[in-house]
Length: 475
Ligand code: BYC
Image 1: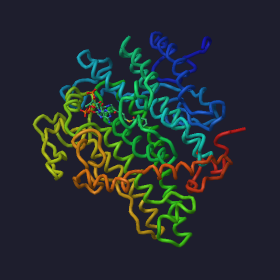
Image 2: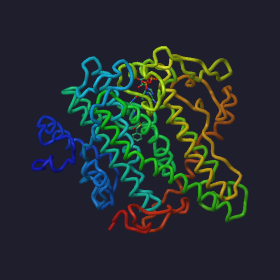
Image 3: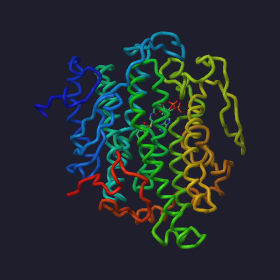
Image 4: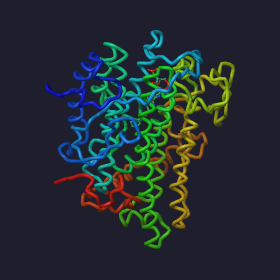
């Protein structure tokens, strides 16, 4: 890698030219990142020109620069949102003090852990989506997948920047470890559950981008409140990119729903099986995928009652979603908050100290946001005159973390016994048969403007281009 001008190569607004120590750390890390990208990044398309958006600065014009580029040559930049002058910490024990420009010694370990947990998800998702290019439903979708992948790569850079710039040798070791763990690996798995699941097909990818990337939105929004200013500004800028990932997920699922509805109408039948016979994905299969991805994503918020969450907040390191808009004392010391809990065969709401209930509170904001997207999918079904409603399962359904981890909960929110679970879980979660069927549909469609039969075309193309634009050049 000798001879690369990294100051030029890494678009940044962190004054890389002046910060020789950071520059050296990044120069050392970059070849390792590229080795990881080539080994674990999108398989089979590394030499192709892809029509991608690159952030070259944080202002209005710079953050969305579109051009053809080969992915390994993508300019993974380091950007922090513009600082707000005179910003004060606005929650927790340090409320009212100026924000920190350096890591406070007493919170070093906690802050590093938060940054590493966030950072770990980024390469994990790229690993999970590694083989999807082979079975793309169109060039438009292929390009969107790669856009998401390079931006997750950039989000990894964003966390590595924080580790390298503010955590010295420990930070550099953590930055290397981020490239060593592997999604789904028995011995060195990724840190959080959902990031060790497979994303074997495009329906899973769209669900992941809708549900799991949305966890990213809420976690980043909570970290964007941080008293540690470099983290807050980094997360604020990441949120601008996250919006596109959720768009890919929401419109992706919507187009699969639309195709299912069209097939059902076209073939004049009210049975869902007819959709499969004609090569679509029926609404009940979509519901099972939804149940799975929602449940692993709500797990990402951690336990309902968490002293970690209380500590993050009290230390002014991680706030609530839209902290500034909340009308309370932003310290929450004596306050309580109702949290769901299992009481025998019932689910009850139990008042807990508001500080330990913060994970649940963030999960609630997240669930309300998911519901808005599901409503938009249902609108498509309604417009086709079909009597079917997609539903978010109860938050206790199929949980591995927290109060519901040891309970069996039905999608409609009843505590059930193992017998009922055994009898019905095949109606609630994707079955092997569903997975085999969905996999059988995954055949690549790479002619510009053409789409696989199980998904409707999008309403419009990217950056003003038509749908049949050559978003990825395969020849
Ligand atoms: N899987 O008190 P608890 C994104 C661990 S996504 C495995 O319940 P806490 C993206 C927890 O780590 C956003 N382990 O929870 C999306 C803890 O372990 P330690 C990612 C889990 O600590 C798509 C123990 O259980 N960002 O950006 O209050 C594509 C007890 O924890 C899980 C963040 O997560 C789980 N699901 O909260 C690309 C933000 N849940 O420490 C990117 C940073 C909990 O005792 N992370 N555990 O060994 C955090 O704020 C917190 O770590 C969590 C957990 C919210 C994740």
